[in-house]
Length: 201
Image (cartoon, rainbow, N blue to C red):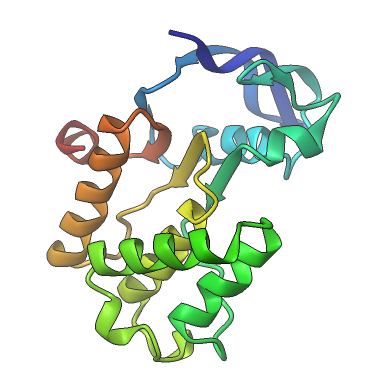
């Protein structure tokens, strides 16, 4: 089994505060890996560096063997990052949003439609596919956001507090989707500050 993510000496400071200090971490391909810790522990900062949204002050990041600091475009092609606040376009419907995202990733149109339908049905959003995202509740917005993160079939999926603010039914659907993807061989890293949630997933 290969390594999906290898961090060595990863460090990030904000002023005098060290958010991530000399972190070594290896996540194997096919693992569902949880970063646990209280708010402010550096979990989100770590994943933002892996996603290429923050530049580390020191250290290295390898994603499936790709040096993400030397070749960030190649690294970004094989990952997906979903922050704790879904970033959607409120005027687009759920279906239009997935069409837009799949276009950005240059996913074949036929493949994208098949994946979008599969994801929306699995997340119980099929009947709402033609509704504008702006009208969705906070929990409902997590569904198209997660589907958008998966539409290009990333090798590494990173989720920041994926069940925050979700009701029990939606949380169960998201958890089931993550477990299904893990069983299919996908690599998932998620952050959590509640041990009980991490153990359930």
